[in-house]
Figure 1 (spheres, rainbow, N blue to C red):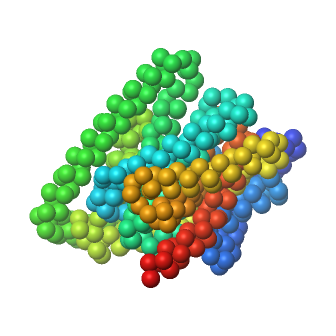
Figure 2 (spheres, one colour):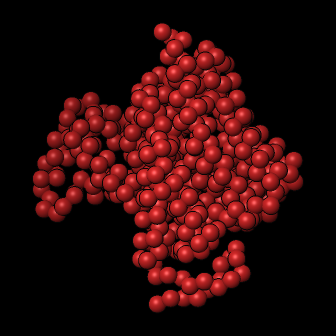
Length: 418
């Protein structure tokens, strides 16, 4: 059955296609354009976003972001964050955050954050929009950074691990601030209210860190017992008659952490990310981890993630951008503040200038995490469609150009080392 309704951006009637027809159009176009971009050695997510723009209200006006598509997009976010967590060894990250390395994380977050604040303030935007522009400028797309470093074969290098650890720190800090903003949304926004919300959020963060730390300690103790968990898990799996019990057990564990973070008032992706980081080869065995990664990747990259990125394209509306000055300013400040922040942080931490520059460039991609935060803010009514569309363009451009810039930087670094 076809429903006639009006779009929010265009005051003309359109026919709402059935849900599965919308899903079919989105998936096919997203996979097609994603494949095209992959062949040109660019992230598939860019092509998938463009697919959403083409079939959405901005151009063809065929598909619209319905509640059902939003639910599938949320699942896509969930699996993308899990895949990112599975790629990371939490011990390596803890090592790389020790000592002066924390300076890199602080500079790479707060310099872009304050720069984003300043630009938004200069254009006379309201307080909440100003904060969110700063937040989206300061973020680093952890999954995109991992993918770029993997493609360049630098994921396990010293610089690569530092980039990942800084990205994790910045993303967690950004998501914590997001939790505070969502808590104060709809209040009287006085200093006392904000201070109270911030205090409650910090207390909740402490509780979550305590839960995470306790879980990490228990897991480390179990790992020290040898292959106890792996052998126990294999026995448990052999007992079940149903298919894919390992996948179900793994996701029950991840969902437990996600439930805890949501109960504490944070976004579910924080719990999903850290839960997946706790699962390692030394805990459950190489084959079990490989099976989990393969199943998760197939479901995420083959179906849910393309729908999520195409859904971002559905919300994007180029006609809503009337403030070209703001668009150009946000893009410029996104590039310069993040690269400078990473460079200065690396220099203060004792890295030589060339490695520090690689750090700054490696942290520049926004992509997934920035789009997730912008999407949450837009859905909560904290930013309007124009600001959302500007942030989408910024995320796309920084993600497109970072692989090229980082590849050249690593090439120069290797040339100077030889």
